[in-house]
Amino acid sequence: MDQAEWEKILAYVDCHIHEKIDLRSLAEIAGYSPFYFSRIFVEEMGMPVTGYIRIRKLQYAAVSLLEGRKVLEVAMLYAFDSHEGFTRAFTRLFGSTPSTVRKYLVSYTVPGFAVPTEKRRYLMTESKREDLRYGRHQLIFETVRQSLEEAAEGFCTRVEIMLLPDGRVRIRDNGRGLPLSEDIQADRMVLNKILAGKPVTNAEYSQMGDLVQAGMQTVNSLCESLQVMVYRDGRSFRQDYVRGIAQHELSIHIQTHERGTEIVMKPDSAIFGEGEFSEDIIREWIKKQLPGDGRLDILLNGEKIKD
Image (tube, rainbow, N blue to C red):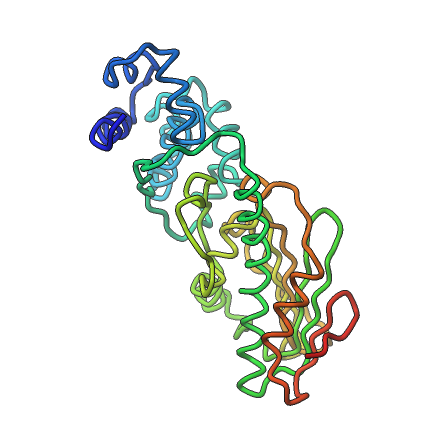
């Protein structure tokens, strides 16, 4: 199918987003049999037709939730058979329940999916696997980059990177820590500005390109879990996120602890798979970032990295 045909099909889905959309209707627009259209769709879009339609409905549903609609109302609006079925599908995609999204997601805009210009095979190629492996490491690099900026300003002398089980990583520095206080409203604004993201599907990620200088909001959006701990002014602050969405109000405790910020994150396995981080890749990147003046120590799994 050419560009115009794809645009027509994807526009039809969006225009009929509140209805039940069947495969036969889309196949007729394309001029193919349902079987052949289904195969072409998977090859070009990298997912089944039904999966694409479900994602689009749930993305529009997230916007409706932020507009203040009730969960049951939204489930019916987007033609789900039941409140329970909608909640299950929504939680599977976004990692958070509709109620949590309604309460804590800061903002959301339905992304536009680009019409495919070349075939995207459903089975991942070796090249694609390498791209995802590199992208997984970029999440670490972007997080460490924040600590390097603290060091450049003279507020951080030590960064620790620890690879943990289950594909998680802990990154801790002794910088100033995020500017949090006992003012919950002010803290929420700070965290929203720096960290709050929005869920990203694997289809969106395939169109994002390089993550260099992407920012912590993007990093957070691409993590199926991210926990941030901030230590400053004799207090500890904790917030947990799932795919960029806060899971509770900020937790504050009185605690004597060296100042700094600690982040424990796990890349989204729905996007990056279940792969592990590579010490060699991380070490080589760190060596290129070290200022070389001896004022900053970076440790990987307890071992100091030397330039």
